[in-house]
Length: 335
Image (cartoon, rainbow, N blue to C red; front, side):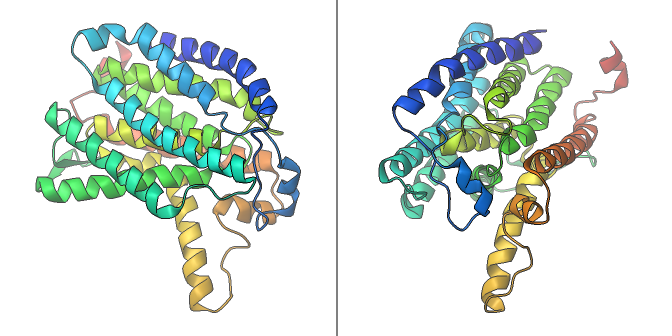
C-alpha cells in the first residue's frame, strides 16, 4: 500500500512542480538545441525548454521524505543511497545541460570529465552498498536461481562498467518525445512489484515514486512535448535504474529490463563501426534505433508505443525470472 501511495504522491508533486518549472525555464530561455545531423523535422523542436527532469527529481525526493522516512529511521538506507547515486548523475546532466544552454549548441561537457565523474560516482556507490552489507560479489542469474561468485576486485570493475554503460544507454534513448520516460515506466513498475514480492519496501517506495514522477512528466513531455527532461533527467533515470538493480543485488536483470536501452546503444555502436569499416556505408538509415524507425516512416507516437510495449514485455519476462529467488511463489502473491 505504501508503494502505491508513494507513486500517487510523487505523481501529484511532480505534476505541480512541472507547472511551476516550465514557465521558469522559458523565462530563463533554457531551450534545447537540436542536432543538425538528426531528422530534419526535429528542428521544429528547437528552443523547447529543457532540464524538465528537475520536476520528477523533486517529486521523488519529496516522496522519499514523506513516505520513506520510517524505513530510514529503521536503519534501511538503500532508497536514500539509490536516490543520491541517481542525483549525482542528475547533477552531471544538469551541468551538461547548462553548458548547452549557455553555448546555444548541442555540446555540453567534454567526454573526458563527464566519464571520470560518472566513474567516480559508480565506484563510490558500489563501495557504499558493500560497506553497509547491501551488496555481494555474487552475480544472480534470473530463471536459473543460482549465483556466480566473483572476486571483489573483479566485481568492482564489472559494476563500474555496467553502471556507466547503463546510465549512458538511457541517455541515448532520450531522443523522441516521451520515449525514455515511457520505456522506463515498465522498469520502475518491475522494481516496485519485485520490492513488494520480496518485502523490500524502502526500494519499493523509491521505485513507486519513480513511476509516479514519470507519469507526471509525461503530462508535459508527450508528443508534442512542452518540455524535455534533458541530460538532467535522462542521466538521473539511468542512475535510478542501475542503482535499483544493484541495490536489489541483481545487476544482470538489467539485460532484460534494459533491453530497449541496450538495443538503442548497440545500434549506435554498430552504425559507427560499420560506417568506419566500409568507408561511409550504413546499416541503419539513422542511429540510434528510434531515428531509424522514424526514417522508415514511423510517427513519434508509434515509436514510443512500440518501444514501451517491448520494454513492458521484457520487464514481465524479468519478473518471471526473479520470482523464485527467495521462494516467492504464486501462493504468496495470491495472499
